[in-house]
Image (tube, rainbow, N blue to C red; front, side, top):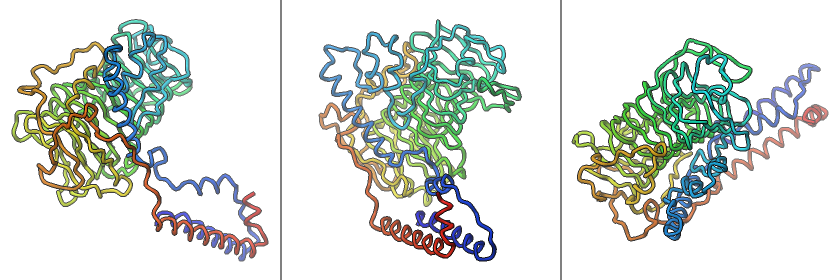
Length: 515
């Protein structure tokens, strides 16, 4: 039926033209450019991937290939971990010379983030932030506002204490490899209406609200900013964003918030700790543009001192894969407004509090409403009584096909997340696993709603590469249905017939105006 709407609009426009032509000598020229715009404005959210399950399946293949390569070459290349991002670049002894190869290692929905690939190397030599409206050359703020693509590195270890929000321009990579870089202070990182950003190997912590001041966002624009929320990284109306190997903690609001139609995001290999509301994906329940939000959350460590929102989702498609959730106080994954949540191969370690064992939380929603939401768990390992409440796959026609990959177990989660966070940081996985020795229950494929223990269990079948996925096949995009093809044919025929009649009755004015 949606395809009939543009055709109905064409019909109304044509009738209006005919009435005008018959009632007077008035003629309305129609430019070809405007016709093209209306013809192709069929998608509300043009930046979302049409078939998110294809992205999920591609990630599956990459992980299995990386694990296979590690098994075959582990004696010769001890640097291999099975993590497809790290194995893509870390075994290169000249990685510091070939830094921009990192841009080829992306996975998931943010895989197309170019960052500053192809641009010059910008070396940050000055850790100061004295004037956000007129940043000094050599500072991080001066680097991120430039118009051209830049690959930004650091001359030494730095503690960058911001006076106000650090507002990025598009096509930037902030690459902290080789240096110990901390971003803290007021505002922290803002990615607003930009694209192609990579933030890699950076500490972000103790971020506080700030604002009511002028801040430069490009070489030619200084604008007044209100008070920020105090997020570690704020993603606002942005796309093609990749955050990798960052350590985030102790911020006023969220550690990472993505809202207002942001999409094409991957958050990977990062470490989250000491925070209440960790990650928000979606502005509010009524903001329909967030239905196009697509986020991959992979190989992260959700560590000590966390309370909730890992993440908290609204709308969209969220793929949570091979993460280690070692602590939460309230819940791990929550949501409202019918998001699709595809949880695969994660390890969920519940707290000791018997009232907080559930991984999932439907926020302010009755069961008769959320029972149709597409929340599934596949290959997740549940420790210390953790349980995931799945629900049906029929919530949204757009996302009804969350991938079914028959994963086995998550026993290799330590290997995949061993370097999560900034390289060289300690991984706090000692006493956070009381009594854990690799055991726990493993969730099976769940496709329909059920109670608290609805997920079936399965044991590892000895397949080394079954850590998250059993099969290696990739599902093709579903073909259009016969009904939709019929609608397209009939609508097209009627539109052409109407245009032909109008052209005849108006002495070819319509067709001439399209030229």
